[in-house]
Length: 120
Image (cartoon, rainbow, N blue to C red):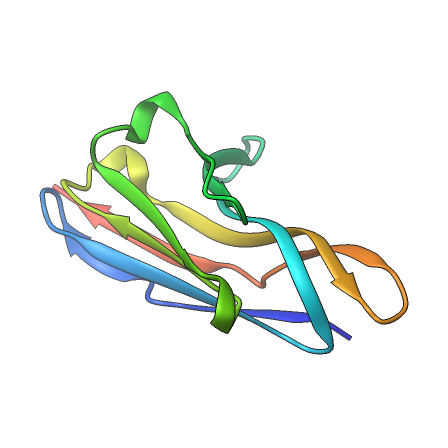
């Protein structure tokens, strides 16, 4: 069984920074892509940023230049550094791992979510 455990959410003032972390655990051989989605009540989840094992990154237009995603493939960990936070960045942030290769099959896994609150 593969699990994703997120940490780093919290309450910050607009303009401040936060870094989210997500660790994948279990019988994992490799993970293709790891990333972060966010969701606010009443809206669909949106991709914030993702990074593949070969280093290809993808960012939502709304966070380009402010957020940075990084991975430690050896530790099956992904980070999201969020700078210059805005009230509209407030959401529940979910870690996602796609193409998780295990002994039995290839999976897509989601974390439980971590809340980011930004006040002005």
